[in-house]
Image (tube, rainbow, N blue to C red):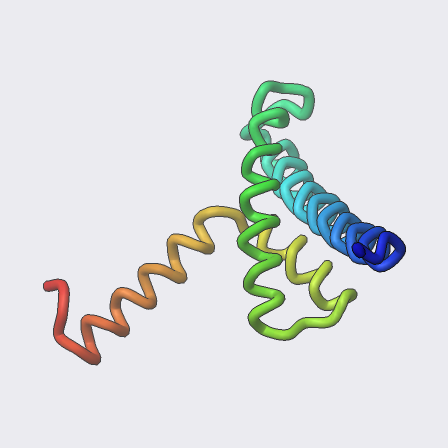
Length: 111
């Protein structure tokens, strides 16, 4: 039979991790949005603020996976997720560009 208590404990831990990741990534994207507002490139209350939400979710998922791969603890993981979300998709693009250049240099492929 299924151990219901153990199942709920596992579900609670998973939801806590998910919500913390979502919160950290949202804060990271909000920090980016505020920086754009301060620079005069955006208005605070605009559609662009709403458009940051999918980016926050995606960056949170990517950063959480990377944090797990790196073996970061809870506090480190939260800070890592917020930082990666703040830096956004250009960071991921740059990581792929660096990886591509390393592969080209090492294996001479993809020229």
